Image (cartoon, rainbow over all chains, first blue to last red; front, side, top):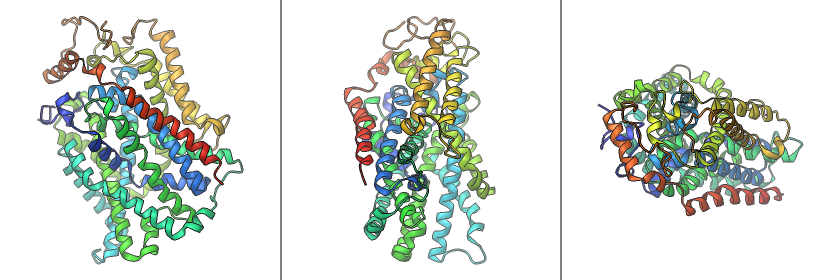
Length: 466
Length: 68
């Protein structure tokens, strides 16, 4: 039985007790860094490299990433770290004892979508590695072997996560080496092609330079806001909120822009952001093997953290709460395995826009959580009410849903899409001065406060202090 | 209302939802330990957050803007 106990509490969505939260700052930082560094770093660097040169892209991405990480940490961090709960449970005081299904859906879609992509990337890297090493079975093409490798990757993720948080941390201790391999690859590219790198011009730069710079910052903020889905599952293993700030900011916030420089340098100099493609030209087969191993390890570490966070999020559903951990894991991995095995090309071609739209939702969620925790509840959270769902519970609101959160969320998404279309990157209004994520976060928070004062508090709902 | 936790001061056992005994044990342990209020970000945590999430990015943005 997977019911949380003294030995298996980390596989449930119930709060962890102090004795069970034994990750120190280093252990937490390593797990966060392993989760953060993946193929998406090249994609993030590639997008920034379309608009900015290497220096300005690096500065803008790093600044944006650290701002995005700060927003996520300040929004979900205190509740998760104080009570040992994951991100979805931390959103119940804002969205309601049934309304939490909204952030839970965002978490599930984001993590399943991203992890399907990452595991396909993993499978392609392993398949290419077999090809380079001459170990590819005769009669099989690269694309024929990818579904099998994806399925194998899902099976390994499943086996690692049987051990819950211990599986995540043990594997992180090994896979964290890939962060340093990534920095070495960056050094190789920079040292071999420095004159070309500093002279390289971005291919799709906008005539308005401020717009390009702001877009670099926005790419950083929006990318890191997606960590909302992952953060709670990992920081709840630390004893309290005091010990999570530095590991989160340095362990999860900093590796993404640093490794994104690989993708940015690649797209600026070689017109290819994927190091496993260009490293073979720089250093031959040996470097290709190292690069492919790096890409595989990076994606694998992130997929493990993602599936773990998503499985915990699903445990908030009553039907899944008491299911054995292995079944909860299977339920989480099954859609990833299905997409990765049977329709990898469809995932590649269609999931980018879909994930961009899902990512837009995390800015309003952060704004709502910040407004609620610091300005309305003044840091008072009722841990019992997070787990009760009956009428009369402070977080029951109306039929389990908080209209203030729903209105703020919808208007926040509207503000984002008005300022910046996440699919076409067409922008309007003050985007070039403010980005899209920052005003969205602020406006969603302000709307939440206004509706709560005018409607929710007057109706004596929500358990707000008077 | 408990000022530190915002929890109802004397929850009426009759109106409480019946939770799983293990979950109930965990919630009671958290409610009685007072750890929830003590475990929030402290001054040093806020200093790191402000330095790495606000001041550092602001400096980087200014520096980056004047790069050639």
